[in-house]
Length: 170
Image 1 (spheres, rainbow, N blue to C red):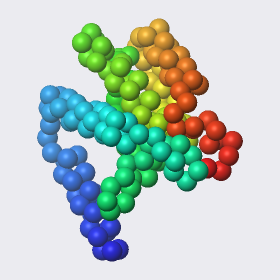
Image 2: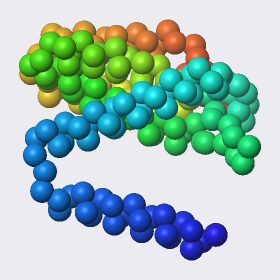
Image 3: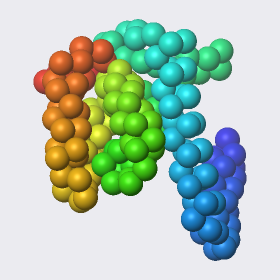
């Protein structure tokens, strides 16, 4: 069992090393970013549609269940943070209107999925990401509007009971 974990981590490190030293163009990097965002959106949609909110360790959370086990909701939220950050950056910093129009609702959908996991760390990471992107954005008004939306969604979204989890131990 321990060897499998070492093998998985070693393989991931090897892939990371190969990707970082491989020459790439701007188009290649755009394809990688699009794949990261598309995979996170598909996982979020799968999680919210196929696996509705259920009780998990005393709290209502989205948990991916399978015959052999389940995915920790915190890991699920962590897996969506990078795509959330990429979508926010594209929505506030891109010069392409079509990319902005696609990235803004994608960021909102990912944020709602992160909240549905009930992950306190996921919420804090998403809020910190939104603050950082707002501070670094070229379009401050658009960025500030998106930050307000993120805060409003997090304050009003009941799914996942993430705010109640801050007060309790669940």
